[in-house]
Image 1 (cartoon, protein in one colour):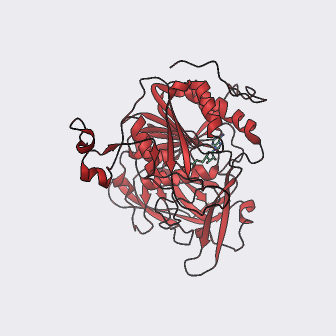
Image 2 (cartoon, rainbow, N blue to C red):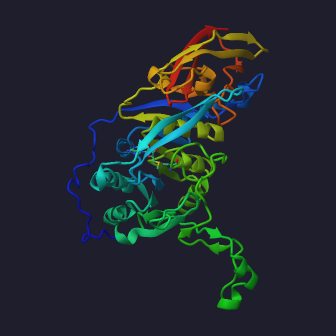
Image 3 (cartoon, protein in one colour):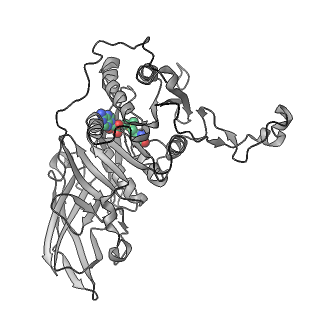
Length: 467
Ligand SMILES: C[S@@+](CC[C@H](N)C(=O)[O-])C[C@H]1O[C@@H](n2cnc3c(N)ncnc32)[C@H](O)[C@@H]1O
């Protein structure tokens, strides 16, 4: 596939935003996570028996990066990932001029009093205009091409606002004949307009790096009419019905948006895409064991799907709420280990803004090799800037989103070995603030607890004691 030099999209400051963007890219691994969710109702959570194999966390299946994706992609290029990805899916801002918030409800289980807090996630280039948008995405698309493997593909998810401009950029970067499909994803829901047709589709532009791109055909059920008639009556004996169904077209009407607020999949993350959509893309353009990426991760849909389907993955987002939503989602999913890493300087360092106090730990010998450890949270005070968002004075059980334990803290990277999550989606007082664990016997313990709150902040406290 050759580059076509003849057609270019031009805007005033084109080329002013280029990489390398930094001489040296700061990078820090923040957490290793081995999903192991303790139920609030367990009297003893038998971590010792359930997870003897913690060493796997050193070889994670996935990596969540916090920070700007241009910095991350440059970091990946510098660290051996050039040509490493079989699939890149991105769902970037659409130039929709909207500010996106994730709104959650805080409530006590026994009362009707509640607070809704609206947590800003990202704003979609409101007043900045098309040239600023193109200037942001152009170098990113270029570096994504360098990250693609010989057999790799990129899927760029957009809508009517900007897809036509980005198509021309992709033609320039990849070449027009590298466009494999313009997929039209149709969905329903919402009310219509009296001034134009209801806008009910997105566009997904699929470009491949070479003619050898990975492609696994997908199928859809035959229509009732086709099944009744059979193909042969129309097309002759040459055509038979396939067992798998009919070959999928480039317009998809069988997957809807996540519309219902109570849908199991709904994580209250604005712009969250359905897993079924991402599964189709992952199945089509990657293999078991492929490395895949989503550099605009949002709620982590791509990571969750890749984890389920045996792909290794990298995701990135610069919003703390997006990172926390992805983290919690992957813990709940409970498959495979992954990391959280920071690229670039964190403008709002977590762990330092809120206050966490733990109860003094208690430990008792259980048998020859194991002991019972009781851990508990005594106090948590969110950052005052966040507390001022609330009308009511809520207790810590309402304000803690979830918490994690590292049973052997090394003083730098937090290794999350067990996590206490909410059972329900409402931020009520049902989360447990204490945990009884069966752990192996050691002379000395250094245990760290990390709390994530509903505002996207976190705090860490360490306890050292002897058996
Ligand atoms: C449309 S949402 C993605 C939604 C996602 N597909 C899902 O299913 O949840 C776009 C995301 O890109 C993130 N984002 C925007 N610009 C970014 C940048 N330069 N670097 C990293 N993340 C960015 C936003 O914070 C937002 O979470």
